[in-house]
Image 1 (cartoon, rainbow, N blue to C red):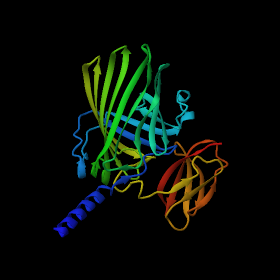
Image 2 (image 1 turned 135 degrees about the vertical axis):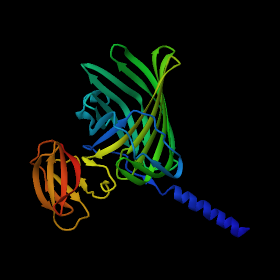
Image 3 (image 1 turned 120 degrees about the vertical axis):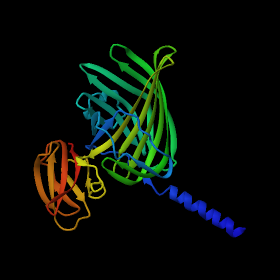
Image 4 (image 1 turned 90 degrees about the vertical axis):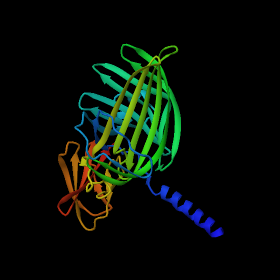
Length: 342
């Protein structure tokens, strides 16, 4: 009986140990990072939860929208004065039609959202969380969960300022292998979140939105590689509509996603970032490699041959965004965006 009990304890330990094998440490994009999402407005099954799940989203239709994301210092983005506590902003260009600025912060491994700003045809829409929303905490581990409440206001053109309250809860409810149109990722974590928000139009009458979201994270990309969302809206307690979407990551820092193009395969570190006079690069390749410094639109403005840990003089560059491209054996190896800030 004692031997059976021992085997039982060992089995439980092995099972719990397996649960912790997948962990996502990096959920914080760097200043200057850029990525592209493709969105399809249709209903998709998010699949199963639990351990060792397999999700196949390899065959999808044409995208309805393309969203270009850029991470910037908050102070450099329109609407920053409304969000003094924010350190970074995600600037989202939706198919060239609308630009949205989301103001964030990553403090003590907490992913905090302070609100958003949008200006269209001279009219501003501003959402300010006086009690900010904590979306996640890093690292992400299987079966981790948390919840948070937030409140603030939203200013809408021709309507005015409306108070709002909301709550969000999430659970890392699955891990396994996911296939998108651009590749298969064997160690993915899925985050399932539920967010409810009430906007009070007049005392006691609310517009309510309920968002159920599934997000798949993999190591080497600090943003989800695939998102499935269902959004329900209610006006004064009456059901209004329900919408669906699937969004997948198509490129990160100018490099298209794919099985052979994952960020981890070819990578290097660049520091300090932002910088003023010098940058250093660390990479695994031995010998001499070529460094090219590009403008944000891809024009080469500086070339230098370096070894790992070399210090590169960038004091001649004007303040702004740049891309460091490493060339190994005559072929592009990897790219990383950086900022000159004086």
